[in-house]
Image (cartoon, rainbow, N blue to C red; front, side):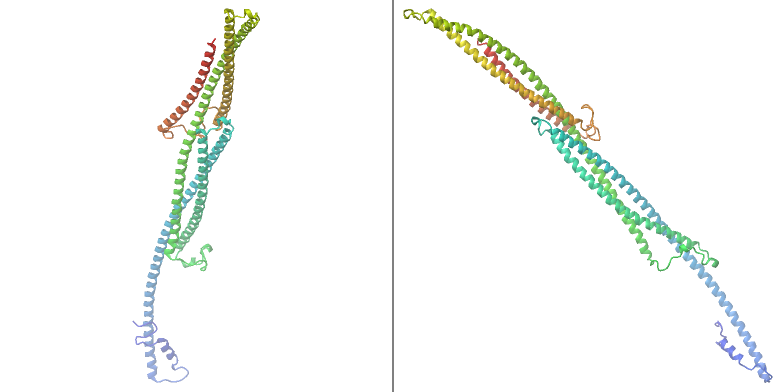
Length: 484
């Protein structure tokens, strides 16, 4: 097929027209040969036919070009639409993933803040318990020197103080770790929100691009907000674009998992420490009540023994009075016998005879002197025993006074946790839960019973030793009374 503007013989029609226009057409009053005249018409007819063919060729080429252009434009529009639709789907998918992850991050931040609040409340309770423990140790230090013993209560207070201090330190470290975790999640949240805003804006722009019609009259009507300078940012590859969002999501999931592990570890540590704390508080409460009961029982035993000593004092003093009276009764006859014996020695030498009278007077004087000496010895012995009873009574009174002071101190120590009386259960916020099989196993209960039985056995032995000394004193006084 001849190309446009060329004849079938390959003649350039533009150049041919230029040559023809320079030929003599016979105008201007000149004559031409008939041959030229005929040839001109023939050439013009040939030129017309050539022009017709060229026009037809041009029309065919234009039609073909129009068809190809329409097909190409339609195909390009379909390709762009499919690419935009795919891109919108990818962007929407990433946007949904970002929204889900952002919701999880916000929820996790709320959980961490709630955990921090619970830790702060827990630390406040622990600090209150530390204050109660310090007050108990301070009040208990005011006991009398006799009562300053490293008993189970003192050991329990020291153990509880160390345990509470250690737990308070762990709680403060956990709060600091939660703060760091919240800071990391806030940074992750900021990145996710920025990425989500960009994805939402990209969706809005791509949807606007997809909605632009093919009508040429709308060219230039796009909102200025969609026109961004080409130098604002450099375009990324699709792989880099997806990888940036995936990196943000992966980083967010990493910190979410780390935060969940932290909260689980904190909950486990708090549960374990609470169980330990309740067990220690239960033991301390039991030891304090046992100490109060043991002190009260021992004080009652001491008071009973003091009453017995007082009764023995009264009997010893009564016995002394009887001995003194008997001694006074013997002093008159002894003086009389000595006087008789002395007067009888005034007889003349001839009459000085060791007769029965002399012997009887001598025996009377000897007997009365021996009895008087025995009575004097018994009075002295009774005086010593009375002094010993007085000293024992004074020691018992001092011990009872110390027991009273220790009892008041121990009762005050028990009531420092806020309870009204000893029969009331300790507050759960300071002491512990009720004793159960989980917090007080059977073996621990039996061990505690054995400890109480040992303390009671020791107190019983002390009472028996004191009663033995009292019996010896009675035997001594009884032997002295039967000598005359």
